[in-house]
Length: 91
Image 1 (cartoon, rainbow, N blue to C red):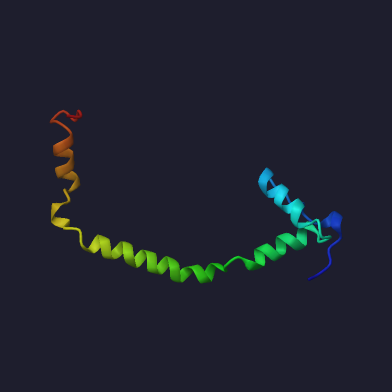
Image 2: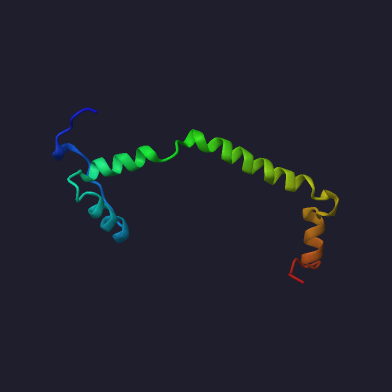
């Protein structure tokens, strides 16, 4: 990691009281806030790891949609005829 002087670094803003208290507890052993946060971020799953989960979820959704009888879904013209009268007012 390249050293950047502290005054040149962007500050970390924590807007959650719960997170701030937890960070204070985790830094009692002498570690800096940055070390604790970087360690926590390193433990998070990488976005690529979630691609499999997303693909699996989308496959399950597509399987559900495939079972829908599309002939029973009204067209927009049929829907408008059911919902609006000849003057365009809601029924």
